[in-house]
Each structure stands twice: as C-alpha cells, then as structure tokens.
Length: 246
Image: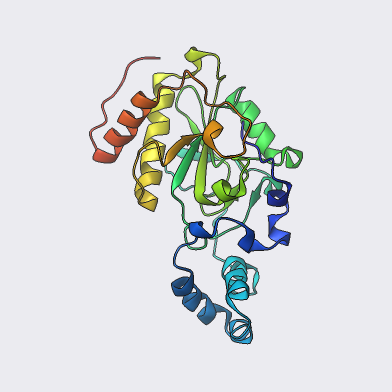
C-alpha cells in the first residue's frame, strides 16, 4: 500500500520546496523565464536575491493570483481510467513535468482489495495515495492527477519524480496478479512512459520495495517483471495481443 514515511512530505506545501531532488527539475532557467512573464512584478522583485529564491518561485508559481493552471473536475490522464478523487491531504499540488521531471513508475500492491485502496486514499488521515489503482479484472481508477505529487513512495524525491500504480491483491498470493491486471497496468504504464519520454526498463519501472528508505516489500516475489516488461514494451510498440487467462 502506498504511504509516505516522511513527515516533511505531508506538509511540503508549507516548507522549502527546494529540499527535494533538484535533479528532478526540468530546465530551471528556461522554465523560470516563462514563469517570470506570468508572475510579473513578483519575479522582478526577486531578481537580485539569488538562485534559491528563484527556485522557490519556480516551484510555487501556481499559488500566485491569476496563474493557477486550469483544471477540469473529474478529468483523467488515462482514457481507460475512472476518476475517484483522493483526499487533498494525501497529495501535493504541482505542475509536473514542468516543475519536476517525471521519469519513474513505482509498482505497488494494496495488501487488500481495490475498494480498500480507494477508501484509504479518500481518508485524509491516511496521508498517502497513489495516482492509479488497478483491479483484478483490469479496471483502473485514477485518484490523483499525474501533474500533482502523490504521497505513495515514502521518499519525497521519488514522490516528485514518479507515478504510483497500486494493484489489488496481496504480495504472498500469486493468484492476485491476473492476466487482465497485468495487461491493463502495462497499457497504463506504456502511456506514462510515452508521455514523459522515458524507457520501459527496470531502471525506470521499479518496485515500491526498491525506493530508498522504504520498509515495504511490495509488489513481492510473485510479481512477474519479465512478463510485465514484455507487455509494456508491446503496448508501446502497438503489438499487444489479447490474452485469455484469468
């Protein structure tokens, strides 16, 4: 199950936005030029105060009046998903990939049902959510927009650079991972890789257990990475075949 163990992440909007992985930013100087046009006098007033203040302005631009990115209620980033909003306490507003580069997908397992995950993510006390949840039959719910930072990895830098995908089931039950689930998740991951321009390999698609600092074990030993990578790459190449296994 997604969670953050970093208390700073939970209150990140009230803290120094430069504390994350600065390598995850895309073209700070270039981006800031556009932001400066948007923020006008505020940017001009910061012109002489150094890189840190400019970096903060880049991360926090959307808080300034008149520059919030328009958002459509209930919109999804993946056409096959339905919207089921996570509590705002479980994610942080952002403008990815412009303020943070997205170059990872983190694979999670719920340790419970699809509905368990959605209920947890709606709960503000849970303090965590993934962007997507995939059900055994291949149905997909999106709970956080991809441009926003979901608290799913337990590591602030990874939260900022990744999309988190939960999968219904249990790490110690191989039957949790159905063919429909693998294929639906692989199609979703393929679109994410294409959208942000990173390869479908084990450097960029990772277990939750591989995130630095986490004590989680998901997706566990029964998650078939060879199979999953084949499916993701086939979906990217447009050569996916229809499976008939449960």
